[in-house]
Length: 511
RNA sequence: GGCUCCGUGGCCAAGUGGCUAAGGCAGCGGAUUGCAAAUCCGCCAUCACCGGUUCGAAUCCGGUCGGAGCCUCCA
Image (cartoon, rainbow, N blue to C red; front, side, top):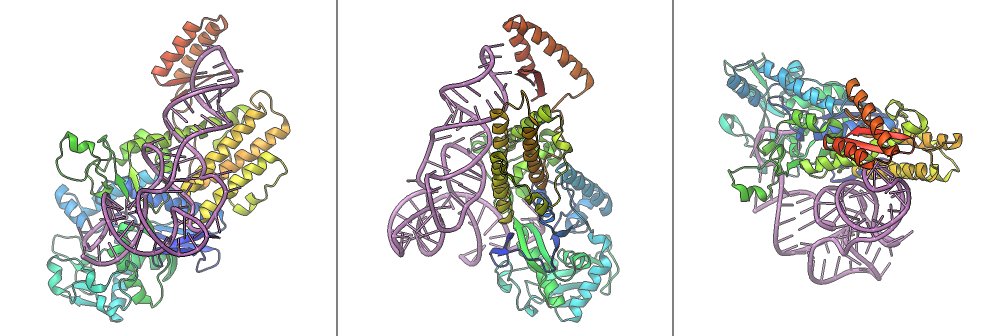
């Protein structure tokens, strides 16, 4: 039984979708006014993993991530850069999508844009007016918080404690906590025709409208960053439930926020203030979106690779705060090396490529692996532990530790039976079975779908040169000329190539 | 001020009432190696502090200290 922490009830609940076997997930995506930073990727990566796990558990999952492409910030950006709003939105959406791709997020089924759902949004707003939960004021439409008895139940806030947006709108609102469903537009602002004049949607209404269109009036999971609980999700919930008279979402899931905690200055950074050297030493941790120099996600991906970043995020439970640091990323990379080494051993022994293995689509099929072989028994124990971690509110941190256990178990099996020397058929079968299990479990996390770049021969010329170097070194070693042999090895190490001697030959890799 | 959450070894991080407190990184010792690398084996914590509940708590309750988020745009 999968259990899920629900922000609404503040506790873990048994996961039971509204419709048997089917799951609808809506995740709040970005407002595309600027390039994405790593904090924007936490939600997509964890929900990508959650969807994979739910699929593996037998559910038919529909996952929606919206793109907010109309909003005050976009309008401001558009003025600053002298470009139309939709051009900026298109540029930033491309950036977002390419980041998702690099990080292996490929499970999204729908990515609706606010501007493509204006009709739906207007309809939704009209419904709320008709039902007495919203009112028009001078071209603006506001949600009437006082009309909603339940307002505040998600973020545990009373209506009057929840002061809405201020500014010019404030005078037209009946209550300070009322929020805009529709905003009237000035002449130079992007706008759409509506029953209340030209205008644009408010921030929250698009999610209510688009989730209804794609997932229905009630759906299973709504996700987003912890910072969206109030006001965004509180208001979405209010709109939808007042409009439909039934619960909008069964499980509200919120991921922890990422903070910058690095003093290296490259990606992390400090929150504010000028600060001299001594201050920089005292690491200031801040929410990424508020820290300076938080951008540069694409350069981060270039330097570390998407897999490392994904693994780094998945090693922590999704609800906890993640402190971002270069060091943490580096460590994640080192930890990943152990897997790569095992895949190489597997290839040497069986001549099969781990990355080409097809992951078992379903947990049930996978359950059938039982054996009286002690080794496979241990493999299965680790698998069971992995699954119970994932069942427990998608505890990817605990699950990854089972993966390390699994790797060690397999390595031990290879060592104890000297499989790299000679591998009998029954050993080969056992090894293959265990590696297949590893494939199945890592596929759920969305890692190891392809060989890491630069892990083997980067190009033909390098390969040929390395062959020559290794041959020369082998000759030196055969002649017990270890000074030369070591000089070659040390020299290569200096330029980032690691040499591994084994009984039947020498391997190399870019480290 | 109101509302949440967190504080586990040098660092990261599972565990949320009961076997000897997972795992990763770093470190140390050993096997292996010409020496390395890789791999394997072994070593390295009583859970911020104080008090309480309990036969029994890192895990529940109260307090103290420290940190974070939301209450304004925010993944």
